[in-house]
Image (tube, rainbow, N blue to C red):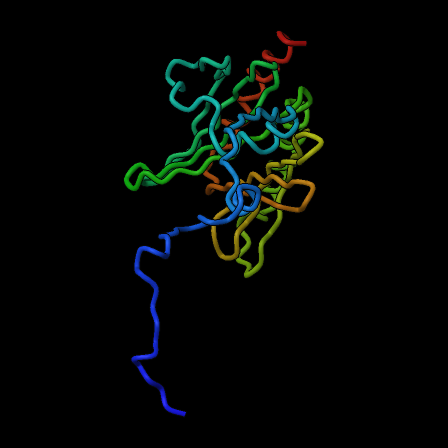
Amino acid sequence: MSFREDQLRTPWPHAIPITEDIDGYSEVVQQLLKPDSPDAVEISVPFPDEYLRAHALEVVPPLRGYYDSGTSPDGWQKISSISLHGKGTERAWVNVIQAPSDHVFLEFWKKDIDKGNSSYLICHIGEELPDRFEQFMDSAQTWFKRGYSNENSNQWVSGPSISFRGTSLCESWLSLAKTPRGPVRIIIGRKDLKGNTRTWSVPYRKGDLSRLAALRHPVKQVFSETG
């Protein structure tokens, strides 16, 4: 059987309508295939205070941009601050800050002033912290006197530790530890219910414990004013 081109019939060009996308379908089918865009709806989801204290403040420091003035438009206040001994271009400091809800936090900061890199960790504390820190200081002095800080070991040598009250969603602590063949470090840690842990640490310098201990007084004062 041979093909004869003269027997091929084509319709007049305008006999076939030009269609695009979903043209030609019934209105009901068109709505199913390409429904109208829904109107934008704004939804406000309030986060529980426990969540904010445990997680949200890790992302944005509550006093960012207002550390010099000491008070943010939202009502956060810087109560006190101490500097830890730095080395070279490294700087470290601790802030005591108070939320509008009267909750009290410690902010731990370190920064390389040349590179501009900074690290930050915030911990919620309770009114029992000053008394617990007294016990921590006694344990730390004993640890140093016994020479644990001078051990030349390939392993970490754990030192004294103090636990902050934290929240029902996480726990936090401060501890001293001798690094493998390295210096003693001040370590701050936070751990949530899922086991996720964040740490912040700086090398310990002589006198840092006394500087940290000085935070007991403003902490006691702020709790006595809000108690």
